[in-house]
Length: 142
Image 1: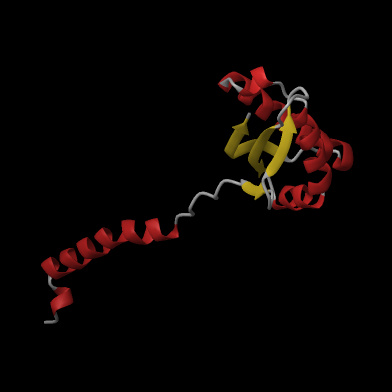
Image 2: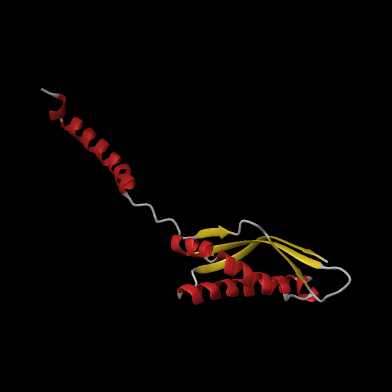
């Protein structure tokens, strides 16, 4: 008599197979796709003088990063970087001393900078691609 013909052996074999099934199923489950977010940073920080003309110049130095929705968006931000940078320099140079002294003023500038960058891509490519603008480093010297 072989061991697999014994009823207890069959039951034990069946139990082992059933215990292994959840592991096999979990290995076959698909992992959720990674979120589609790409970050593009200007190579150099933006350095701009701002405020009213006076006895000494005031400066803003900011590192700019863009969050884009696709690799095509990342490519297009790099492609149009000169125009985006130019428009951001003009925007930053129009800021007032009062705006740069408050958190609210800086947040307003960040929102305006986001819209400015999105406008460049909308005008050039017909789509904004940029979902957010971050300023990981922001220094005001007055």
